[in-house]
Image 1 (cartoon, helix red, strand yellow):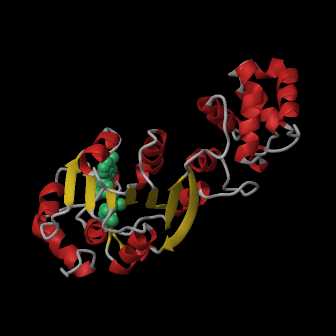
Image 2: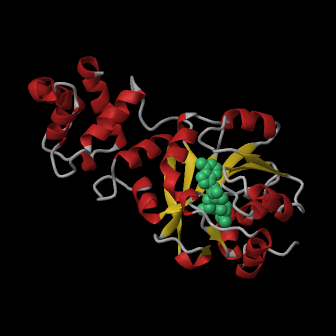
Image 3: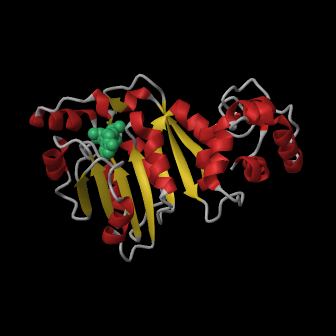
Amino acid sequence: MHKDIATPVRTKEILDKYGFSFKKSLGQNFLIDPNILEKITGFAELDQSSGAIEIGPGIGALTEHLARKAGKVVAFEIDQRLLPVLEDTLSPYSNVTVIHSDVLEADVGEVIRREFEGMERVAVVANLPYYVTTPILMKLLEARLPIDSMTVMMQKEVADRISARPSTKEYGSLSIAIQYYTVAETVMTVPKTVFMPQPNVASAVVRLKMRKEPPVQVKDEEFLFKVTKGSFVQRRKTILNNLQASLPDGKARKEEILAALGEAGIEPSRRGETLTIEEFGRLADALHPAFG
Ligand code: SAM
């Protein structure tokens, strides 16, 4: 086995060789601890019949661990300066393809079809650039790609919101948006000391397992997410107050909102943060004829 990229000494050597300077604006905090990488790739449950998609390979710290475990790895990197570095550091691995692209602009579905033909499963594994965590996750989920799971490092505060359960202070529209598509679990918290440079915030790894079916069948998904967002605008207010403030002409249409809440079996005095996804689903369907 080759010497790990993700040790402080080797990372420094590589950075010096290429005169590389970190760009904070691209969320560049590289992992320098092989044990953490072993754990992350372990949570992703990869084998030779798996394809792995990485977002932001950096200098290849996680990429090489993926290359050792998965059948094939495709990594999207936005920073052109890293391309020659990756070509060098990943030269021992013949099963890695690096694509120079902003993942938010890329046609990931097409890449999966092209690169992972014949693979039994595809997993996303990444130490995400924190400034775009939510847009990246929502893009991949909304595209309903043939992906089995996503094992991703992110800011701990975002991880807490993503895996939050109802009636907790972290539970909100992000929890519902993600848990509508996946079963979400925070599998590990990670100290700042395993990064170079160290980020200002705490980090955690979340594993998202794709659901085959959503937890609730609704008439209109987009409207479900509108209702959910609208229900959390002012957390301390009741669901009735929030819906009146967020639905079109809601103030004047209190009776219609009350009727829908009644139909969905939800007390108007409850707060949005106490509603499960199933309850939001019923509520969205009940509101849909009048407000959808
Ligand atoms: N995987 C490496 C590691 O763990 O050491 C680097 C992770 S670093 C937190 C995030 C990486 O994502 C950087 O290499 C950065 O250049 C890249 N990146 C930032 N925004 C991106 C985007 N929109 N699309 C693709 N890569 C991006």
